Amino acid sequence: MLRIFTLSMLLTFVGKPLVWGQGTIIDNGASTNKWILHNPEDNRKTLFLAPWHPGTQFWDFGAQTQFQSNGNVLFSGKVSIGTSANTPASAQLDIYGNFRTTTGRFSSIYSSNTDGMYPNTYTNIIGDSQLSIGANWAAGMSDLTLINSNIGDITNGGFSFWQMTGASSKKMLAYLKADGKVGFGGIIPTRELEVRGTNPILRLGNSTPVNTQINTVIGGIEFPTSGENVFMAKINANVGAFSDQPYLTFHTGAASAEQVRITQEGNVGIGTGNPAAKLHISEGGFRHGGYGEINVDAPGIIGGRLKILDNGSVGIGNVSPPAKLSVNGEIYSKGHMFLYAFEGESQSGTAYVQARDFSGNSTLNLRLRTQQNGQIVEAMQLSSSGDVGIGVTTPLARLHVDGSFRQSSLGEFNIDAPFVFGGRLKVLENGNVGIGTTDPGAYKLAVEGKIGAREVEVKTGTWADFVFQPDYRLRPLTEVADYIADHHHLPEIPSEAEVKANGIGLGEMNTKLLQKIEELTLYSIEQQRALLAQGDELKQLKNELNQLRQQVSK
Image 1 (tube, rainbow, N blue to C red):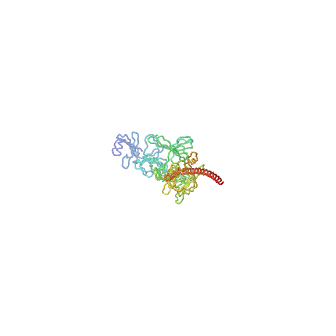
Image 2: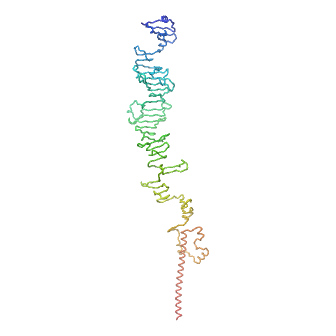
Image 3: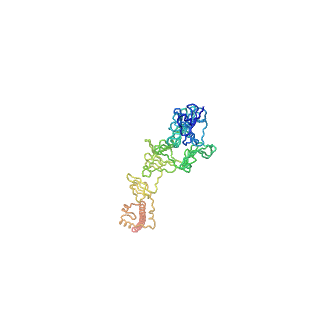
């Protein structure tokens, strides 16, 4: 039976004055089941509903329900909504049915979870709250999803999302930290987005079917700088002229210019939108920094085509280059090959071309070949002993030339004698040649020593035939005799002193000697004529003498 008491009856019942307003007692006759509706006189404009507490023998206002004049209702205990069964609520709020909010905020549902069944790490403290969502509460809660509000500093606070895997087991699905970092896969994120799991995949989809789009961007990631629409870098997924031609592009700069493209064939283009190879770099350089080799593999051989070691050694066809450049095979090149000094670039020193390997026991020659009319010509051979052959592959001397030899007009040509530069042969720029002398002087050929020859041909501009000209004056022998007596040498012939001082010209001397011989011939002819005339006269005298003898004898 329900009984209702007035204030005066209430005073009689409890034997104590009740202050702060009026109240109504609701009693069904049981000593443990009575309530009071209380309206205090403190301007709070709140109606309190509180139970009777048998232990204290007074109203338990700590377990009361408050109805405020602004429409708010405050419950100090657990509340069940949507059920007529006399089943105590197991949480602060049990809702049987749908739950909907239209305005305002939705906050703490379960606080201070320390029963071990709910997530209580990363790290929950008094005041943390939890939202449990699921339908199978009574069957072990294995299908519940839990959302924890983890109170902490800017580094560790945030929301964590859990999935119950049993009555007292669970796994964390995601964590949204207070500093904005998000983690999936049971981790506390240390980056803005972090995903862990067994072969995790992040997938970005397009709500519009890709097969209906061509030559367009279907997704991407953008990295803004100072504004929402100002991008320092972005990555786009695109489709080409056909829906089965996807490709990736990488953009940088305020204009979001495309820098890199990866095609569906796996070709990578840097500076080009149409890469024709696995790596296609257009209008730019390539740099590899730090440590590690660079390898261009041959089938089944790492670095079989090209290998660049950490120390800068390059191998082409050689996986273990012993020098800065090691080529296993022929080199085909257009242009020039320049060598600077071993001592360093822009320094004086020596540049080397070597025929060498690293076996330590081989003998190597160096050969230069040329091509003439499509045929290989053995142009030059440098033997291991240092002999040089030009036009010959087996040189037998320091310089062995098979063919002509020519030196340009500038510079001298010298064949040295021991410790004498040009001591065996010297050819000056003016063409003068010295044999055995380093100073041929004004002579075209100067020989210090004897000359042996089977025949010497001398060409001169003049000859002594002028002696036989009619107008040639032949000196009388008496004049010649007087000249010899005065000068002690023939006319037109240099004296001994002149020959010692100036030498003689072979052609000139032969001409002068021939002149004298021809003069002697003319003298002989004159003498012959005189002798013939004398003979005729003698014959005539003999005839006259005979005639006289005959006359005397008569």
